Image (cartoon, rainbow, N blue to C red; front, side):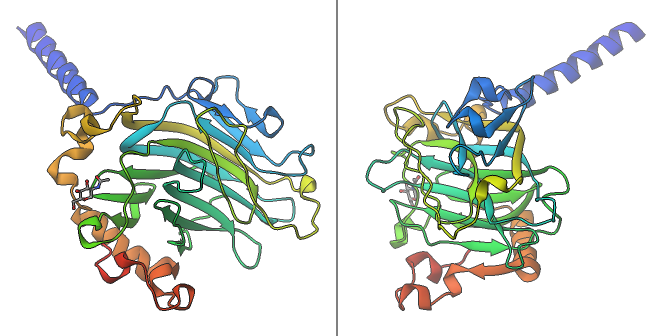
Length: 315
Ligand SMILES: *[C@@H]1O[C@H](CO)[C@@H](O)[C@H](O)[C@H]1NC(C)=O
């Protein structure tokens, strides 16, 4: 009897476990070798298991950016990555920036993008976190926050959640920003006809422009400011690990079935039609305590013509 009970309990646990598994559509292996390609091997150091990968500024290209790009393209879902940055021996961020983003392929600069950017803070002593959204090539939606920890101290988890209702940026599970779909009120939102690749990058701080094409990574470019530094001597780096992609894989046609609610397309359930009350509380607190810059407050930048979404509630 006791044996049977424990067997039943075991089965129930197993079943519960199976249930939670079917509530996701994790399409990543956790091995960078299998799920990503990279710009060039000079700037990429991969661990023997393939589970951790460091991007550095190489000598050859004079410190151009290093990029890793997912082999598959996606629509919607959640994308987690653990990231740790390093500073140089003097504790400076030395003008380098790290990137973690989703971007659509684009030949004519009309790409959609969801972007985390670690940029040197003004005193060059560390990093601040900037997020941005591009719709049809239109960016300039920067929000910048101070992190409540030192991102060079240890790994932290950075997540992008994306569905037809909103995009949410999270750090260690804490929502820091939401970008809502206000297209019914005339604002721009990400297109479901533009599948995204997941990208990690590291390079000089400056204007980052990925012009990724379906043929591969060769056409990726980073525009940067030339200010006379010898970037090859900067020993800073960015390490990525423990990525998880729980998303709808683009099959080359349309994304209609990526928007149908189901256990494997859980992001379409009504409960994800907006940020949760917990996420709203997180965002309020982050904005109150850590916000450095919000494009919706920057009237000068837009010459009085603020982006449509700025007149609607953020969260
Ligand atoms: C954004 O919301 C509108 C309805 O308000 C919907 O028609 C549209 O499909 C949504 N956009 C995406 C990309 O899902």
